[in-house]
Length: 342
Image (cartoon, rainbow, N blue to C red; front, top):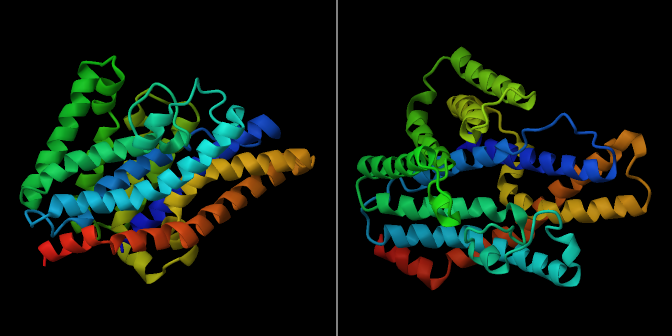
């Protein structure tokens, strides 16, 4: 396990959570998080991590029998079952109380919600939009497994950069065209580059690594204060790239002093990312009914929502996601693919 990456996964999910808690606070308790504007950068960090992890987990799989199929099967079983489960929960809420789902986003696309298709409307689980980019990246990454590791990664990075570059210089209007040429694809490419950088990062001077993290945090703070270019991969992606680059170089130090809470936060990051909108909506309504929204200037409201979401994510991970994934990875399809690679 790459501990620095595990910690960063937890950080990414927590940043998104904090952004959404701030939105709930503005609706119910006066917005005590009004100065926090960069939680969305957690998504950009997720994309960087995804590029890194795909290279890390397939390092010895290139040009092996069934590698592409095994890769895609594991990606599907890792992401789709829990996502569909939470989407079904959202569908029940939508059918009973349609006004509680995407009430301010211009409609909900039910079919796109389940199959992660590009759509002008929102998904039942609104933050599931990031998963369609993940699967686009996986589809492209599969092509690289047909080649040697070095050449395969060059091919994938080249395709990602070409698609994003085309979209930048020739902006697209159609929903599908915009999707496959989005600049966010660059962040997956950068994550892949970080994997190769990480092979040597621990040899870099400690001062340089700490400076990378510091500059990244400083850049994010500047963006939070309004110093922005308007280009997401620059405003959000670049600071997170620096932070991740510095953290990867500190891997040896982190391994010597592991922090269980941060590891657990990383473990449950996906479950928490999916379930926290439900925890926030339910918690906000209960606190509002009890007249507790403005207690302690709204900080009780924020604290309860944060803790509730973290607990909900951890419970979903421990009692649903982990056993479900373990079960699916033992299914015949996965077993057959493993035998082909034996």
